[in-house]
Amino acid sequence: MELKQAAETICHNGLILVCCPNQMKSATSSSPRLPQRISLVTLTAQSLRESMQAGHWHGHLPGERELCARLQVSRHTLRGALHELERDGFLEVSDRQRRRIKTEVKPKKATHSRVIALISPRPLLEMSPSTVVMVDDLRDQLSRLGFSFEIHVSTACFTAKPARALEALTTRSPAAAWVVFGSLEPVQSWFMRRQLPCLVVGSCAPEISLPSFDTDYRALCRHAGGMLCGKGHRHIAFVRPLGDYGGDVQSEQGLREALGGSHAPTLQVISHDGTAANLCALLDRALRSARPPTAYVVARAMHVLTVMMFLTQRGKRVPLDVAVISRDDEAFLQHTVPPITRYAANTGQFARSVCKAARQLAEAGTLPPKAIRLMPKLIRGETV
Image (tube, rainbow, N blue to C red; front, side, top):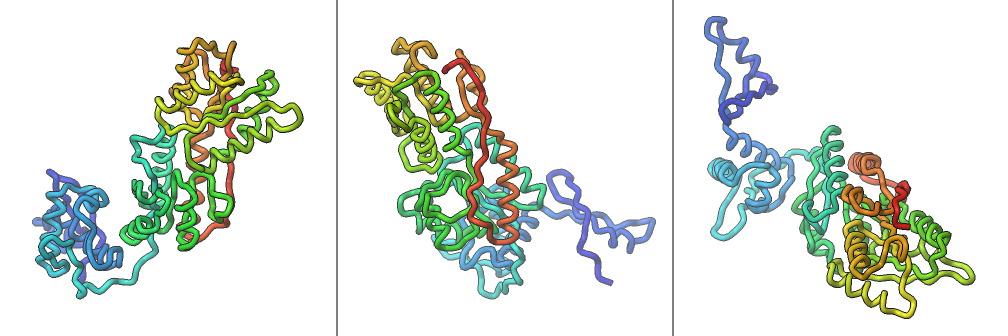
């Protein structure tokens, strides 16, 4: 009688112990069969073999560094597993070449992928704190739903011509759905043309028909502009990074709508390269102009600190001489003096919305190309 495949797994002294219940029953009561010891090397080899049979990789295996990251094992363990697969005839190795998957490995019928992949131009350490929290919430929620969540960091996928890098990534690491962070039109256009299941965290370019989630920056900045007009400000600056990011474009549009009409206040857009030196140089130029701004709406919380400290250095009192509004919020803004007037999104709600959409996209393969916008709340500080 064949033994059942199900087994209890027990960790002991760095090894995985697999205890098969039927084996225990078949032994005599006086001398039960001991649990089998299976090393992590063997389990890693089994995982690689199953992935090859499922058609997860074609032609060649990825490099050792990528495999270690995906399998969460050391290079020593991985090499032991690869040696087992080479010995058993599943892999072929040539000098200075990647390990080739032997054609004799007949792939099994592929099951529906349970992998959801995120692509970002920046690693987690360079993301804003609120974005890191949101990504962690997203990972946790998808894990509870039975999905694997992979993060791919690639600057090459976010260039003006990302086709080759995106093609290589999506071929090397197939996924049931792709979640794209911080993207511009070329990335979005590529996913739309390829008809791959893609969810944009951010705002899409006008001609892009992909589902997306973002803060309603247009409504937010329209509200901020109206608030500044109500305080009598006639020269307002919008401080934003360079690049046609959808949220920044929507923000500028909302401000212009708020400042429209006869005898409207002027809007000066200050586009910087993200460095404090460049931003300060542009702020200095604005202060020396014939009509220096009396109010600043600043995109990205980290740049609000630069603006506030620069104005203080120039002898400008906030809010007596100039007003400052932060379009975005981070926890560290709670500790500024004076407290900064800002808009705060609910990161938990945002993560739940993205998780729900990503799950639907992974399971159905498609979603209506709707732009879902979440409205943040105003935190009234003392800088307006």
